[in-house]
Amino acid sequence: MSKLVGFYRDHQMTAPLAVAQQSAQVKPLAADLARSGILLVATCARVEVYGEESALSNIDSTIISGFSYERIEGAAAIAQRLAEISSSAHSQILGENYISDQLAKALEFVDPNLPIFQIARFAIDTGRAARRRQRFIASFNYDQIVRDIIADRFPDGELPNRLYIIGAGMLGRGLIRSGVGKRFRSTVFVTRNPKNLRKRLRRWTDIQVALMRPAEIGYPREPQSIVVIATADVNDEYEATLQDALLRLEPRAIVDLSSVPVLSGAAVGKLDYVSMYDEEFLRFIEQNNERLAPKLPLLLSDIEAKLRMARSDFYASAT
Image 1 (cartoon, one colour):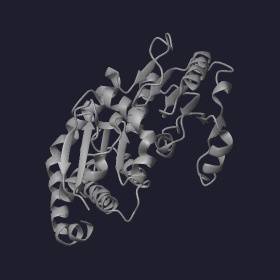
Image 2 (cartoon, helix red, strand yellow; image 1 turned 60 degrees about the vertical axis):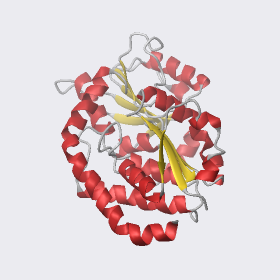
Image 3 (spheres, one colour; image 1 turned 90 degrees about the vertical axis):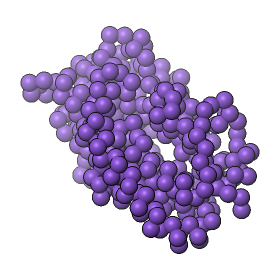
């Protein structure tokens, strides 16, 4: 077995939108790369690959060629990096609670018998545990940011009508679970495939949501509604459908949580459209990160200590 190496590029190294765009481009390659023993971590804030050096030397040029990457070598360094990511120490929103699940999902493609799987699995668990121990929890997580934007758009106790969630993936379901829709008369999941989504939601016996296709939105217009876009799985045809639907609906505001904004300001005309890159959203992130920054050294020390304790027996068996 050749030595384990990794290459990473994240939002701290280059413009976040540029990383997000590349991530969206390479994410479909995860299964093919895993068959070669390579772990691909492609999230809104990073593109990273890990595996044996011999496997990475043959990696598709669209992933690492033409971009500036950092290289790390060895099981210990890779475990440290992945544990820190899992703890949300390197997230755009420090303390956010989605990244460890994203790592775990990326790892599902990889053969569990490979050393990189074993190291990554241990690192994910280590980062999660350190985050809990150090209470490294975002005060302005995605759901709280959405709540605050809603509160701003409906001041003085004004009651909103419906909350539309476009996208039923991890983020969309997490928003519903957080109770962000409790203030609304009802909550609607917007999906291209209601039948499949209905099956996935059968175990949600405690939460009531309606399902609608995009083409059904906007009859009639609902100026007291809020739309949250929580998916990046949007092709040109779907984008056009959503644009038409939102222009019909005329909601009070549209909050786009996609790492690559689904729509542009020009496309939605005079509608109130807030993306993750707008000043209003970035202010929430800045406030959150300022509050958590003093905890970062303790979090990283916790992770380092845990990995150091485990190194003698775990790394010996994995390499």
